[in-house]
Length: 348
Image 1 (cartoon, one colour):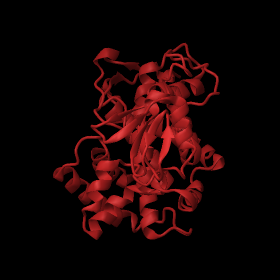
Image 2 (cartoon, rainbow, N blue to C red):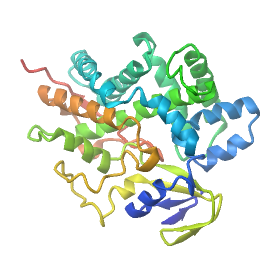
Image 3 (tube, rainbow, N blue to C red):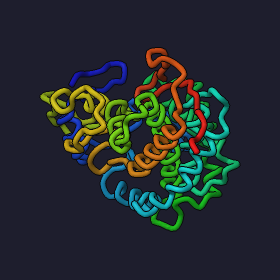
Image 4 (tube, one colour):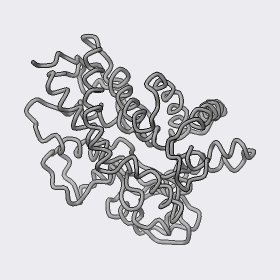
């Protein structure tokens, strides 16, 4: 563990330390999950703008009973039964998108992102015609959490986007009927939209780069991609009291960046190779650990497996050398910015 002045936080990288922090939400609060820079800016904002920034403080940034209440409201959309019932529509969406692509296309922008947006839209009951709006909602959140200094332009984009987001989902029935306040409901909608689109897009693009015609352990492929190419590379925590972790003294109020990507490559736990047959124990941290374990993990696994099956059925292929693939620059979101590919034709 070492202090990273660029993000004003202790960077936690060891697998054992990460699991210990994630399992102790009392000592390590999620309240500043988006990072100390965003928290510092929010403290200076007038109430209405602070409320919009606090939309990021939903499921992922709640602790204790509040977290349990919000998660219970969200669970209805992500039960094993609910996820299984989406399989046919997910497969049809993947096939339709691939069928409509030209001979060569951008896997990220023309397939993975629209696919992930569509699945999240179905979860939230959003009409297909409104799916393109989601991109306008997601981009400003990602820019604000990139790890770069928070700029006036980034804040302006975020406020404009979240105002539109709130106006749209104020008319939606998503997650209504429970014990959530309207602010909590809107925050939950935003969390599902951002996590469900961006992390899935990253996962699918990274998976495609590692997919080959001879590998049929597709469930293992998805797990290894989430481990080795961690789509969301980490989140922040804040110490609620003085504590020692990883041999380092942390004072109350200090921030930690939980580097899931580093923990998932910890040589004390995992070999470096890509192994779809890797045992499930110990578990990777790509979906988190503890009370904040990813709500949509089962849905992401299903999406990954179905997309892998559809790509293999067509003998789809990457149209550029892996070393030429350009990755986005972002502290949390990890994946190719663009990936040229040839979709191929469905067999039979």
